[in-house]
Image (tube, rainbow, N blue to C red; front, side, top):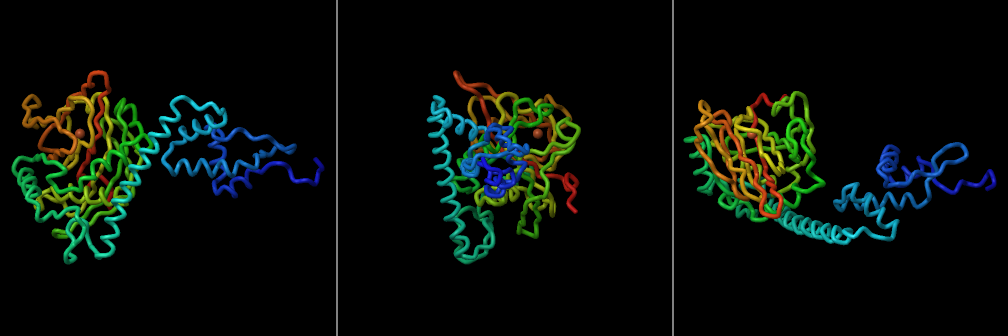
Length: 367
Ligand SMILES: [Fe+2]
């Protein structure tokens, strides 16, 4: 090579700029095996092959399709070896199924949003526009909401189910497909729970008479909870960009009887996947209300029990929630517990549940 000829490769900065990624990302991909370590120029600079920019485009596209970086690495590796791993085809088929399901979800959501925009709706649940076309929920006309509020006021707990609340029938399948996935959930801190996967959102709510205003809270970190001293920051999801989940959040918050509501506060939504012990034993969460909504379950067990606050041996209420059912109770009124999951014959137990807390005002700094 003559000294004035451009070297046959791209420098780090050039690759980063052309691919629209930063330099740290290149190093990170190298460590994860997505990019092979590049050759060096005589001056010691990294020289990437010119097709690296295209490769980065493929990696980003695969990530947008929902593949994790580990999956992308495997796919690339299989492609390089030209001997695809035996399960690769099946995994690609599964991923196509996931993508189809997400497209179906997005189509439902898009149609709902279009109707909402056209009609100038001001709320998903209590819209005041004439002949509101949004079919999700009409809280004030639902007797079920009144029943739940009465039960809560009378006995500090209530059980209901999604269909009785008038929630869109796609809500639960949508939750399972969108949030209970390996790319969203991440293992909880091992000191808190050995085999529990979690994702979380925290929503700020405010009641103005009958009207509910909600927005995303700025932090989701959990401080000094579940016997763990310190701060855990779980993977965050943002439910308020999701029409079905926005409705779900509004519906659940509306279950609290008006005279027992705080004017404003936070609502923590935890997507919890458990496979063995659901919780360690009877306990309280030091929150105002606890809500458990089961989205999916394999196996038996996981019976929810509410124990008398002054006598843990006295069970006030016991019930094994099936998918679609929701229990809400005032945390200070009981110790609550759940029995371990029991695997089905020849299979593995798993429960996917949304465990939510209507928090006390001082749980988060709301200033
Ligand atoms: Fe709890």
